[in-house]
Figure 1: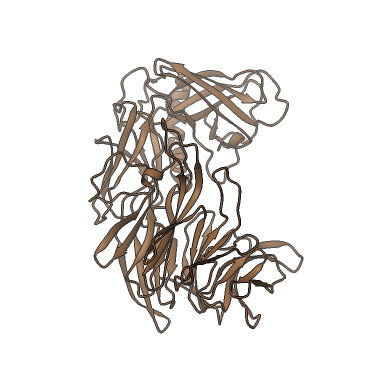
Figure 2: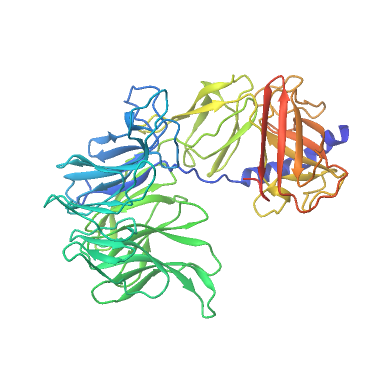
Length: 580
């Protein structure tokens, strides 16, 4: 074990750098999402999992809430409140999908995970996946569906209505002018699916409320309609692309004229890339199309395309800043973008160029915080853009920063942090109107393995080091082979160690809790030779296993582990060829 401790510092620099480069996936909850803009740009609606600083309420549910920006600042609009279904969560739980008429007199939204019956003993027996609501000159709950709204506010469309037991019902189209209801056939398709003339994108074609019939889409290639222009003249779609040999090459973005059948390609992915066009908006006349291009994530550069020429122009943002969501007004001369720099910007166009650009919702320090364990590192997406100074506090105590990039922060949870609910504060100087805090849970034990670095193929997708620290384990360990792995959340250790200080190099800090793991399909658990703090590192545990003298019946396909001791006990693991 002396050799193990002495050899680790030689690899420390390399391992730390690769750890730093291993970026976590973006959270399901984007900071600002579901944008909608009035024609004159005086109102911008958006959803956020945040609470305004001026809101003095406590004990609020973690959910998406709807807000509105005006010249007077950001104001609260809607939340589920007492309708929140307890114990039911999803990536978009709360209020999102804002829709607004061009003149701002009517707006609506969709609430996700709604309790349609009184909550008894913390349980809801009647949970609806979504509920649509209209507000403004007409205020009414529309029913269990996802809301679409035409720009003139006449047509409110419910997509895939459901009952409490998740039985799917027909789409419903409300004519708010005639106070009548109709039922388009098939399934509603797209994100902007109803025009001011009552034309609806469906799986059966482009259905017209005035005639009750559907027009064909007029395309042969496999495609997915995304939005219909508000004047009903064209639609935007995403299509599968193939090369001359018939090999799939990715998704393209196009615009198709309903009247003439003319078709314009707006985006083609670079050869060999994983680029994906993400539609964000189309002008009333279908001429301007707003989209971003992502690559294995949800953020990317934004573009404004001309559907007549097929030319796309990049939308200027700060260096390194990417769009995460966005919307466009009806005339197509105002764009609002939520960005990776944790703000919302508005750009006004004139004569095809940006005439004005300004921040309407300032930088807000925010990130999804995982469950934590005392003494261990935690990884979060960078809560602020580069250059913003500050610190992270856990229950009021400073959490030392171990490493930071423009994409990811790695901090250590103080060893002194007790188990239980805790508030994580992003103490950064911003002009945000929102609280810069998150709630999470701290557990005495919250074990997890460090993942293999991007671009490295290792057994089970776990970072494994050879016994002599000469390199990475790239093949399935042989019977009796010794390997080292890195973990977090294994609890207290023997001997003293200070928060923010690397584990000593001249003496070991073994854990007080026992760890045992079995790697499937092996029948026998591996022998744990050491499980304690990794010498020379902060907040990481080093675990050394000797694989059993047993020949596996096939490739490793999962693991199951148990930790138990003075800090309690827990089991964890996974099934599959790669660590989730």
